[in-house]
Image 1 (spheres, rainbow, N blue to C red):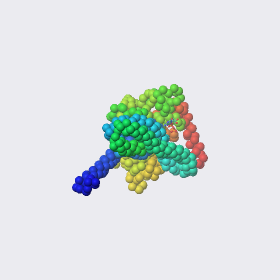
Image 2: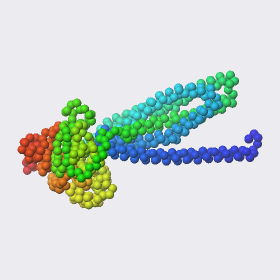
Image 3: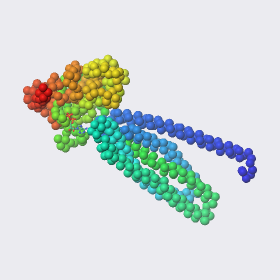
Image 4: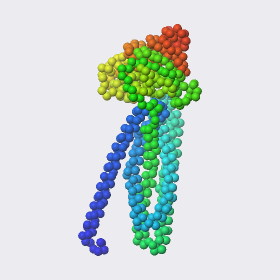
Length: 544
Ligand SMILES: Nc1ncnc2c1ncn2[C@@H]1O[C@H](COP(=O)(O)OP(=O)(O)OP(=O)(O)O)[C@@H](O)[C@H]1O
């Protein structure tokens, strides 16, 4: 047109070009906006899904996975999967479509040249595959180490007071962290080298393909079966073929990172629970009769424990009538906590069953079973938030009358009323702004608030001074009325008024009966009681 002189057609063509460029820009904006929306929605729903699955995972799962790995999968891994999705939508799929489109176009131009180009592709694909495998392995190792680093950090900050009081900072820095960082460094080098090698290797194998193509086209032009115009157009089209290949190659890292992160998340999403919530019973008007029927348990979770001594609990069999209180006693490590945790179905027995009012706990809905039981564990855990949130844990509509009743029953009201804000007092992370005894009283109040049929106290008063313990003991007697109560206590003086006592030794019941029956029997219980009373008199003697 320029050769023919400047006339109106040129303006029309220029306007057309401007129109198409504007259209393309608009389309690119729309593409980015849509992709951003899809990615954000995906990220939010993946985070919610992951968190909700993790909330319902069983105790066994949490024993086998580190806190760092869980944090990593809920944060960085989700981001990596989002980036994978972004790369797929934004670069990979459009590039793949462009690549195929250009190839089809070239095929129509010159089938023999296109076929010779395709013939060289296996070389390129094999090289790419090999590199990808190396990249995948180093990505996996790198992400595992990143998980270990998160674990170390969360462990350190959770136990910072312990570390500082034992002067273990140097050990944490120069041994624990150094090991992980050394690993991270060598893995990062390996990862970066394989990442850097991708584009050059792809370029070399691509250059080989182009050379084969040029040789072939020289031969075809020489024979007169290909015009030089077609050859020029064909060779120019190769640039449109290179572009998507380069995009695909440069996104390979994101793809591998995302794939490894997705595998990790998928493992958490689909792990099979050891404690399956498949029961359907929702028991009403439960009285609270509890029966342990020939229960055997081992933490190894293998169905066939070959050696009986490998059981943590072996052939546990006893009955607690509704409304009775039972103390579980025995030396440290004899299996007391495990027995209580089996009742709440934190684990399932390997053999035998536990029945409440004659119904196997496994046949009940897990939520219904747990509602029946108020569990006060040894370490009285609190969540970050207010005292109110901790007492009425999980409730959205809180019944303040019940909260007051529970706080008073647990002998917690006196100290709560003196705190700034009372029930609104912020307990700090893990309850760090309260004393051990105060935390225990809140944990007891929490169990009372739910008004359960069965109350379980695992060393629940061990952090209290004698006066508070005596006050709670008398409160417990009121709370315990018409409920079945399980108590683990090392101090036998605190369980004098229970109805029944189970004496455990190395996971077996060696004595069972009422306190007076066991005293008459003059066996292990009587021996432990005597030992504790003489210990107490020795201690008293040393004071006075
Ligand atoms: N998660 C676990 N994985 C493997 N073994 C465990 C686990 N928890 C406890 N054990 C083991 O099971 C046995 C019984 O532990 P358990 O906590 O039930 O004893 P306990 O009588 O309550 O002890 P203590 O009075 O010291 O609290 C111990 O040998 C302990 O090492």
